[in-house]
Image 1 (cartoon, one colour):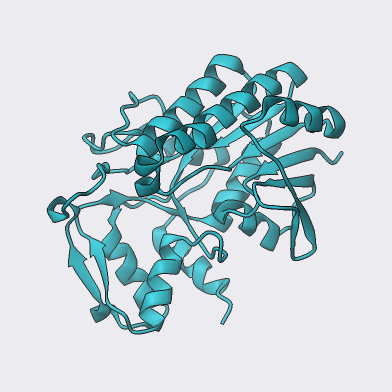
Image 2 (image 1 turned 90 degrees about the vertical axis):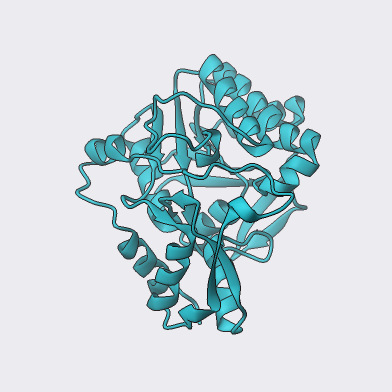
Length: 295
């Protein structure tokens, strides 16, 4: 039986990729913050997630089985500048959804972040202590807290992902490719580590976890810890672009910088054991990006 699933953040990086590669057997309803619009024939209905009564009214009408909540203010620098906006979008909106999911017995799937840690550990498991060091990380942590305090039927997805975005939302891989194709130099950090996942793989795994009716917290990441500099070099090689345009840089020398964790490596052992996955190689993930590249 098909399930009605609401997706928030439909015009964002994650949401636009679900729409672009829509082959899911469920019935998806798209919510965004822009005026009612269409992406490839799919209507996206505007909603203000900070307004409890507006969400409640729509949920009563739709009666979904699950909500995938990906809407967020993800620009780390902007979150520092607009703290109230960051709180409203990342925390308050999530609290509203959590309370209403409890009321209407709806499963909530929440896209969290690897920015919720301080970066002092070598690797982070799902049950490690959370200690964010910037406004973005704090607001995402609060979102998690509201879900965990209100719900039992939830999935919290901690991740860092890349893929092809839209004019409204670009990804790190977009930044790298757009600049290298124009033969522009880019400065990439050699002292920030992460293990990102291709957005198509992320979507696949989320729907697998949902179809198995699993709950709890999962890190959805690739296997290898890699610097942002090495990540850019790998993309350049895969796309036959000039890697000499990628200049090594260090965030530790950047002036007036927003605090960011230097290590965002999330272990994915729980995910691999649950879904019986042998490995999630970063080179394979970049190959998927290349395979879906639209020239």
